[in-house]
Image (tube, rainbow, N blue to C red; front, side, top):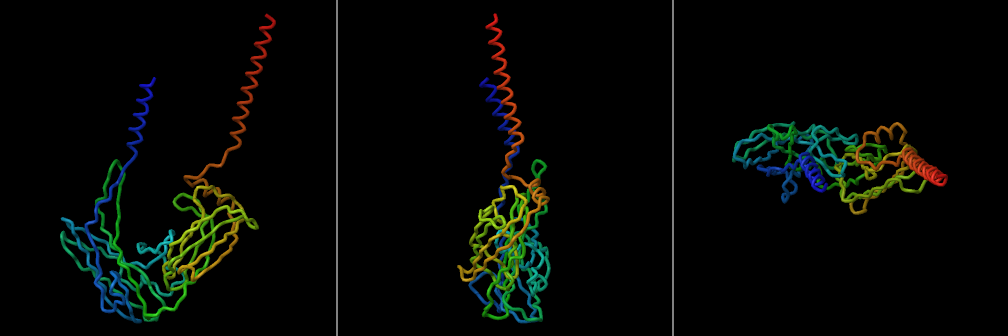
Amino acid sequence: MKTKLWQLVLLMGVFLGSLTMVAKADNLKYTVTADLPKNQMTEEVSYFDLKVKPGQKQTLTIRIKNSDSQAHQYVVSPNRAITNDNGVIDYSHANAKADSSAKFDLNTALSGKQTVEVPAKTTKKVAIKLTVPKQEFKGIALGGISVTQAVGAAKKSSGMTIQNQYAYVIGLQLQETEVIKIKPVMKLLSVQAKQINYQNYVTATLQNTQPVIMHGLKIKSYVTAVDGTKKVLATTKDHLAMAPNSSFNFAIGDGKEPLKAGNYTLHLAASASDGKYKWNFTRNFTISEQKAKQLNDSAVGQKQQPNYFWWFVGLGVVIIALLGAVIWLLVKNRRRNHD
């Protein structure tokens, strides 16, 4: 018996092990640097920090150094900065829509995406054209030049395709005046139940409406039933940041609890620049029965609600079995007494 059990455990181990794949990242064999121009405001940095004028045209250059023993193609993509849903300034979303508060869309001022080939053991210059709009803009325009190696032959193993993408980003900051006296302003655009990576949250869409970076952002939030005090969901995060004129979905909860239909109130307090700027929001919202069912049915990793129907069925079976056993013992005992 022990031998059979050991064989079964070994067989299960081999089966489960075949489903596990560890993908090791290749070492990067290229680097990217910026040629800082004369209108660079801060020389001690490695990104573009430029003072520009309305209508100015300029060619920015970066250098891609291919240290590998073979030629590679690289995708160069100038992008405006956004705030991703982790509260991090992100330069990798080329097709992200400009925020409704933005008066200057940096993507329209930069030349488009391009693919360049760099021979082995060679450094190549790449030009990005910048055209500043004729209409004066306030604050800063923030973006970046993302460089990724084009992966033509993705690794394949057991029918699965694994593609590791890494990017170098050269930051790009434009401003027309050296002194910026614009204060960040946060708005709460909406509150809703939403699924992120197949987990359910209540999300608060927060917006930085001004052309300045929001540094040192801390958000404390919780959800109660309308007119209630018990916290149904709660999340606190700090060390966040928001790009100028951007918005993101701040997720509340741990994603493990099924959503329940009902009327709720969001309580959210935010501060930036080490508490220098503060905002407080209270907003009622509703999760419908249909929305809760839709999200809960498609979510993964949630705690399952106890199914009391089957619990009662099981209890009933146990009770019936016990009663049957008692009756059988009574009948058996009576027959023995008659005998």
